[in-house]
Amino acid sequence: MEGDSGSAVANSQLPPGVAGIKKQYLKRVLPEQKDSQDGAPPRKKQRGQNKKRPRDRRVASSERLCPSLKISIPCPFSTDCRFSHDIDGYMAQKPADIGERCVLFEQYGKCPYGLECRYGSKHISSDFKNIKRDDIKNPNSTFSWLTKDLQDRLHKKAVAFPSSEKFLSKLQSAKDKASASSDPATVDSEKVCSKVGPVSDEDIVKPRIAEKKMIDFRGKRYLAPLTTVGNLPFRRICKQYGAEITCGEMSLCTNLLQGKQSEWALLKRHSSEDIFGVQLCGGFPDTMARCAELINTHASVDFIDINVGCPIDVIFKMGAGSALMNRHTRFESIVRGMVEVLDIPLTVKMRTGIYDKNWNAHKLLPKLHEWGVTMTTVHGRSREQRYTKLADYDYLAQCADVAAPMPLFGNGDVLSFEDYNTRMDTEKFAGVLIGRGALIKPWIFTEIKEQRHWDISSSERLDMLRTFVDYGLEHWGSDMQGVDKTRRFLLEWLSFLYRYIPVGVLERVPQKINERPPAFVGRDDLETLMASNHCDDWVKISEMLLGPVQDSFSFLPKHKANSYQ
Image 1 (cartoon, helix red, strand yellow):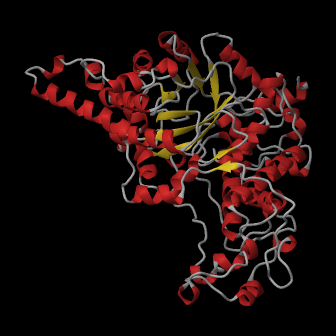
Image 2 (cartoon, helix red, strand yellow):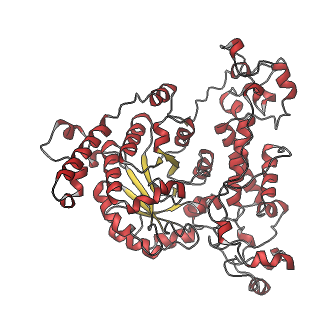
Image 3 (tube, rainbow, N blue to C red):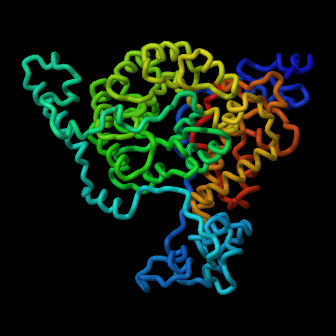
């Protein structure tokens, strides 16, 4: 799509790293705005997270209606209940409904949030009873693996891990022998993680790698695991646009072993996710092996991915995430232990290395295949780089050579089907993982599938956000707390979505991920609003879908914007 000559002149005045926009859509930059337009803010203010962002509002138990009464059943605690039993008083001070359409009531014939539902006009009677429809018998389409019994046993440390204990016992025995040796450095690292001696019954019964459930990852459109924004409602959106493989958000293995409900919520799976994996993060062989065995026994997932790429300081200092790339012995023990207790594929996602001038992914990849990893993804940046430079696909191609025959996925800087084709044309990658590209434009999976640039309209994008809100209310709840959570995750997503530049506005197609959008006006008011980089405008969009916010409400995105630096 070509621009006119006037457009080229207008965009020649733009600084490097800013996308070219057709002349008629560019905003006039005022002199006092020029400094902020020409250069990025100091890096110190851009890196990391906004740790002092506002917290979600919390409602005291005494101000909330008893869970039993809101669905019209007697309270088993009577006078000892810590919640309110004053139905008339609660309904009198309850805010006005956001809308008349309750997603949960339409989907399942009943709303578990009853009188607290912010969309309750259709299922709350005049005498404050929660109405049910017996003609709707839809089963729950979201699978949650943490039962009350399992949570209690995890709290009491009453869950058995027989396969993990066998591996850890062999590992400790080998370490004891190594420490007793006069020259411990001569002990083969494989003997530390493998049993030595005659074949026993347990070796015969244990499934070999060839007998494990296998997944053909090659060529599939894979949505990367994304912290915070890679939640279940967002993954459902990506599935609708053509993603074939999805993976849950990063979960800390220690929190899962402790039975923390908030961590187990990250493992929930929707029925539409036909190939679904979970990503575990940890720095010790014992906890990672036990956690893998726990998921293998009590959850239904298709693969487990080890996070060896997280650059966050708190994770790195724990010895987890990207820190494992420089801790080879521990990394090996973690991988071998997880492979031994799993009957599903184990994958690894890593970076090029920790430091910019000392990449070591190419040294680890042949070992990962030897240790039993099914597939590996390499993000084309080091931990030190974060997201401030382009991914190095030349280095990733070298990694693919040394990783063979293990399939390797590249990761980084894919924002169009042309970017995807360029990576895949090397014929060295089994596929390309898509992360930020999916956050900026989740319909990228449709573009890749149909090999076209989709000039999606602002109304179509609003419909997509409306669908996300429906999924969010179904997932987080339709009461006040559920609406607040849905709004917060919607706003976190909007902090990426605004970076999309419509195809019809661009001077040159496609948009590149390292090019930040200049100030421009869209082809209608809604498109202009969606292009705003101001949090207040994102809140306005959320109010279109979730009703007005309180006067004291404010939002600050979790991740600071350093992607266009």
